[in-house]
Amino acid sequence: MRLLVINGPNINMLGIREKNIYGTETYEGLISFIKGVCEKNDIEVEFFQSNHEGAIVDRIQEAYGKKDAIVINPAAYTHTSVAILDALKAVSIPACEVHLSNIYEREEFRHHSYISAACEKTFYGKGFAGYEEAILYLKSFLES
Ligand code: DQA
View 1 (cartoon, rainbow, N blue to C red):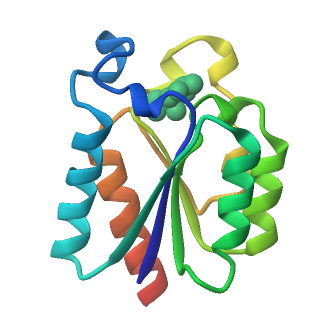
View 2: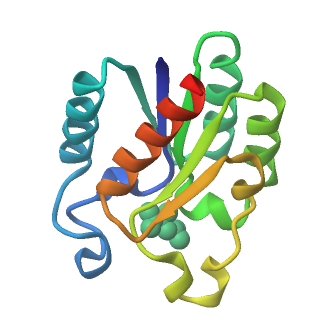
């Protein structure tokens, strides 16, 4: 499985930003956690993080024909971006959405995701473990 993991705005600030919500682990820590999961499961993984909506749309489009699965934490764009939704729909690559925090127990504006409509499943409120669950879900989804 050729997997692309996309993280949106401010995920590069993990370990610095709102530690009470996102914890003390860094973005680099997240990357090595995911690399470990992928090594164990024989998955080829590539990472992309951007604070820019258009850059995320470009990266999703580039994945067309080259990646088998996408795990995406669109961060704040979850709640605003029809463009990222449309990009995921356009490439039709099986995708899962991940949120470190439980967006449904936070401010009301975080309760709605534009991105869910293009995803097989959403994992939220489980920290790094949500990425592992999403990856394993996509692996068995593709094998079934
Ligand atoms: C987030 C939740 C979003 O509401 C927020 O804007 C983020 C991170 C999460 O991982 O919990 O930046 O996607």
